[in-house]
Picture 1 (cartoon, rainbow, N blue to C red):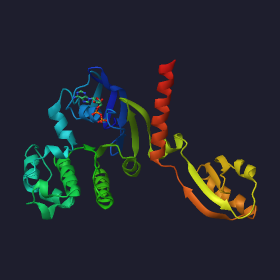
Picture 2: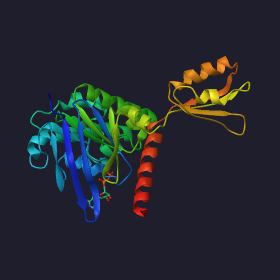
Picture 3: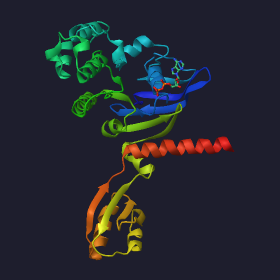
Picture 4: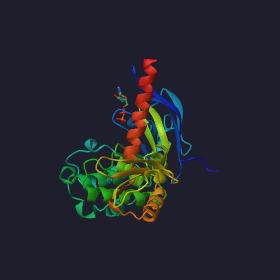
Length: 312
Ligand code: ADP
């Protein structure tokens, strides 16, 4: 069996009294879009920069396609591309100059004109970095991460500051890159980005992984299921709704509205039970659980558990 593309085993890194990374292990499969999601200061940058060989852990080990990034940087550059933070590019450099310069770092770079066309920058080769829009700058930084034909690409805070349409374009580009076989590690603090783009997500907080699953799995595990709200057109038996498979709670709010929580499958059962009771769900509103609520539940639960431990 083929080993995973990236293996992180019990990574630890301290800065003085701060445990930036406190025993993190995970493996990323080939061709996966793997999200590392967490609040500021969670340890995300320390983890990915350790994978990229830009930082060395105090303990643990990392392998990227079998290569140790802490001891074999040269082999690593042939495998891994990392998106530079935009502030690290000079304002006056043109798109063409940046692509040419980055190409020169590699033995067998992608033809940079083709790459520029693929990320939609073919018409902007003479434009200076500072004159590009946020989306164009982001696409250039993705192109620079890809120019060395990496098998693993690390992309950081992809959609920060982008308007929704441009963000969709950047996400589409990332999917296309993955479809060419590149494994992608995506650092983000956007729940929406993780939910839309990632095959699996590690939620990191306080230097540890709090949960690791598919976006759907995380939502399910956090119990952040579907919520239905409606006003029945005729009196109904709330207890009969509570007994339906997949329904976790039913309550009436003061204004005659009923709130039902449960799994997605429960929606159909609630509907048919209402029909049998000859009641129409007026003003029906159905909201499915999001990674957002799952994330908040998970991190809140962790914080509560830690606080309880501290008080013991
Ligand atoms: P994130 O990327 O999730 O915001 P980081 O990995 O940057 O988190 O930081 C994790 C923790 O480690 C934070 O408390 C941060 O202040 C600390 N830290 C990170 N890098 C350094 C450093 N070079 N020197 C001192 N502390 C650092």
